[in-house]
Image (cartoon, rainbow, N blue to C red; front, side):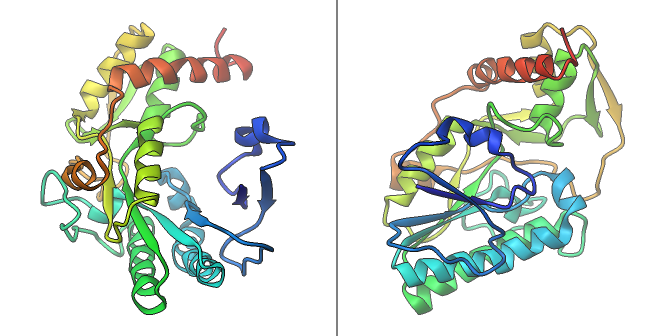
Length: 291
């Protein structure tokens, strides 16, 4: 197994347990540049991209480049090696959706020049070029549209709602709600995502497939659950929305994943948070932010 990353938003701490393993190699490389690897490859899983709003708002050009140039280079490698290619796309291709829940047949409602457009359009382009390589170069391709996913090893200052809320709760602070907190999200635990991706990679499905948990919660409900699990009595505080294009709803229609892959999530939000919170607690203790 070969892992490749330029570490622009990642850290080798997440693969430290694999260091020295005879079947694992890490290469620090920017995939927007030409990729050369010796030997055969069975499959290429292209996950490279800033994925948090705080990242792609600070790194808009890099986000666009990895969606376009990075996907092009990775597809070129797949074509050269005769390898199967899996693109990690996103529910953000649906934008601020006018169809709810979102099936794969929905084309989306995206503002291409809005602050979130760099990420949304990068992934939409990545899907388009992936399908083009399948159609014209006969590369075996798969596209997974990933919905909000959480679990251990997320960055504390990732900027997304799960690490934000857990860290605030563990510090005994009020949880910050942007807007009225009635926006909805669907959260899936990382092990469910991995199982869905594995099944999709080994399936014969070429068209995009949603992998997400259809359990829908308002952000306010999510905040209340985090506070309850942590035992935080500080409640919540409201702030203005960060960007005008924040989706108001997000929920996957997973009919296709159930039918084609025989997949559906098995970890409830409460169970997943109970497995995630201890990791954040240990990180905050390691940094001296809590006792």
